[in-house]
Length: 130
Image (cartoon, rainbow, N blue to C red; front, side):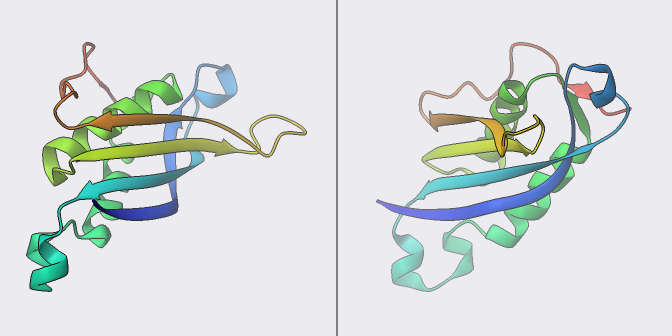
């Protein structure tokens, strides 16, 4: 199985439940592992794989368009978008907030999903960013 990995995508996201988190964006860092087929390894064509530059741009755009209360919901919603638009066979996604707690380097969540198990539509409507 082939995979693409992208470590530490830096983006701004409107995420949080505390009053100081509700007044704007804060930095998050996202790491991805995406399962892909072996076609591109044989063809040497970008059309046969996931273009990671497009993926990173879409992740940042997606986060800029929405507000999330919890990192868990942010991660799951992001996974849904990636399955719908980029079609990996599986993914591991971690997202963390750097230095959000005093004396702690980072806090975050990690999720794993397979395309055949994933329900692309979240059970709750996504909130649009203010």
